[in-house]
Image 1 (spheres, rainbow, N blue to C red):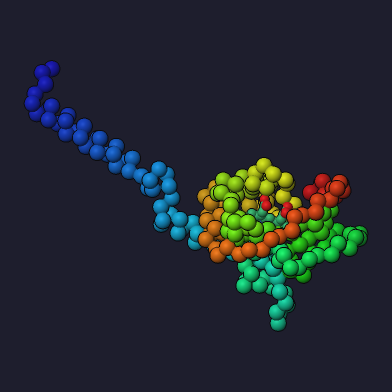
Image 2: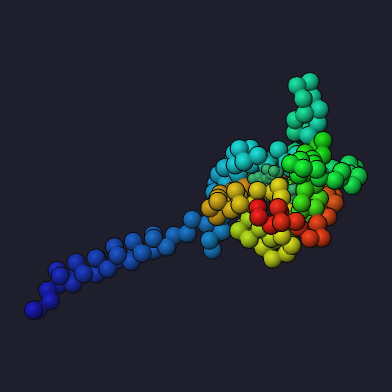
Length: 202
Ligand code: HEC
């Protein structure tokens, strides 16, 4: 078939429209896959909601006594076990009373040893300031510190956080990183030498 001037024009036009569509499809949401400010803002908001509803404050914010009983002290939100609250060795476990908790609800003793809640504010030395998003996600996926260190002890509900998808974990991390950094050095855990059978079964 002989190509007419008109069909050539149509083909050229069609190619122009097609390549225009390709260019538009490639138009990035953020440069090089970077998160746009709007997306980051949405993540921080979603993260704030998740942190509030997934009980992070229950354990990572020290409790204080109020007129209606003990409650998390929001002036120390998410700063972990206070460095000035030095815990004596826990009393021995007895019968079905398998563990003990501190009045601040930031330290626990049980068959795993003694654990203290982490400072989740972005302080570089004592909090999550030096953590990356990948480290945070890997921690929740593996139950190990930053995905490759020591195992994370109870009662940190790693298995619950692991049920969140990557986007939600990124949101939680984005919110935590948006908090003001607070210096509070949490003591290292004291792991039980040999976890008893009860702990192993968990
Ligand atoms: C029932 C109490 C409890 C709740 C609820 C809880 N945590 Fe924890 N969390 C802990 C304890 C205890 C540790 C310290 C464990 C250890 O040292 O092995 C910890 C440690 C951590 C760590 C540090 C892990 C590491 O590798 O050092 C991160 C991060 C963390 N929690 C995030 C969260 C977030 C985010 C939430 C809410 C979605 C949350 N936690 C809810 C008790 C809790």
